[in-house]
Length: 286
Image (cartoon, rainbow, N blue to C red; front, side):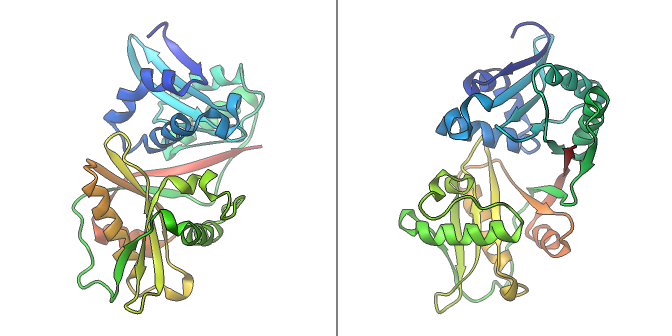
């Protein structure tokens, strides 16, 4: 593997060659590294700004102890880190990056890196109000009885409908929407498979998506019901359908993120059989 310390590269294949086994050994807490490395591998670094893509691997005595990735213009996402490893990463990055917008990770790792970066650079960290909880599926327990209606999977001919639901979701969670139907396939939403829940008359009332199987794991990503239709069981029904489909791909683990400030969605996922894996935080640097 080479000398001990943080190895940095813009080559996703080199990153996965060094860190792939480490990431796949604990796919839940490494869901972001696995997902974005696969997107860069499949679409090419040029789709994300080319030379600005950066991966890192901490290696000691022939073993991997930590990783991170950074997309152009964005912050870094780190694997679980101790205080000492976070300090070493801050020193290494300060030598190659003029600034860093943010860090995201499990809460403890994000916190120790934010403090290490403050000590190393003087940049003041501020934790975002939106805080996430990462869940992993235990035993799937679908709602019984489900609401009236049925699930329908969106296919290649349903791009406009998929883009419509993704836009509604993105706007609801405060994401910047820089795409339309024509450019939707270039967005992060395009690599998912979407399922709608429809009422008996065929009206779509909720959507859930799932990422491809990566490292033996599927992430349920995008669960949305319009505000005026909530409280009727639609989100639970469609999430259960997508979770069942994820297990059908052969996934050993199924994970999803939820906003910790939303008690209704957290309670819903727990009723379906999801259990807390980690709290997730983002610190912005000023």
